[in-house]
Amino acid sequence: MGLSMLGVSAGEVMTVVQMAMLGELPFTALRDGIFAHPTVSEALNMLFAAVGEPEN
Image (cartoon, rainbow, N blue to C red; front, top):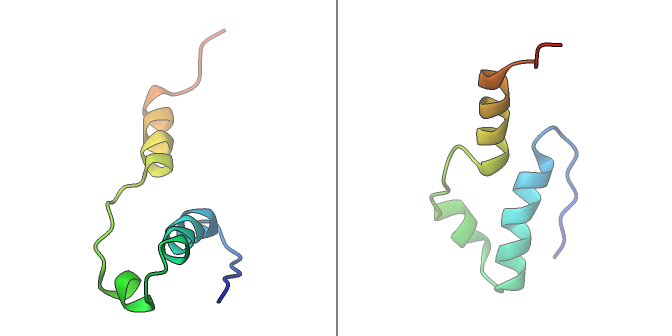
């Protein structure tokens, strides 16, 4: 089985699916799993938005 995705957050979804594939987990592991939110990349976006632009 493989995965192809196109979208803004496709990279984060692909990472979870890749880990399931490497661990040879059934799709039910993804279906029934609880995943942390926000992810690291989302948290970085919020951090950078809170810091704002540097002043020149």
